[in-house]
Image (cartoon, rainbow, N blue to C red; front, side, top):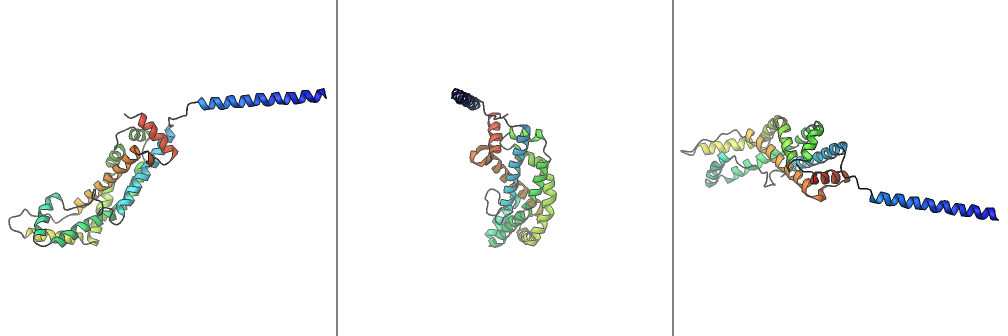
Length: 243
């Protein structure tokens, strides 16, 4: 009987010690600081993921029907040097011709925007850790500036022939040439250049970067846009360590 009592007493003592140890470990874990500094690997993968989402979203939005035409921030209008011509043509009852020009320019840009996504994906894959860190801790538009520097030549090469094809497909080339021809018949006016493809290419690329800048600003300033724990971690780190 005495032996049995000693066994039970020993077991209770062991359980008590184990419980105390568990409580101590729990308490120590509770006071341990949470690791908020992301590793280089987390910064690299997290930011690249965010940039791929942002550029993909921008490309998808602009390549949709009315992606350019229905967006006042990027809608393509007559070139500045041709706006006087547009005003004159409208005053002469050719408003429908001018409307056709504007719609067709935007449709061409929407067609071309479909080609942007793989170019951005390639640029993201080529980013070094230093590029990624500079973007994360840089200005509000650091990523947009990076893409402008690294992708504009490729975008231009890809967009221009497609925009030319699209302009022809939607009759923009004809409409603009018709507008130029009609305007150039007006006495004493500066003649209008009938070639519109270079201008449309430049405006399509510019519109793309405007949308990317909006997406970049959103994820930097809007906590709700940081949709994963990793994004929350790296942008929280960026908020505290801005250059």
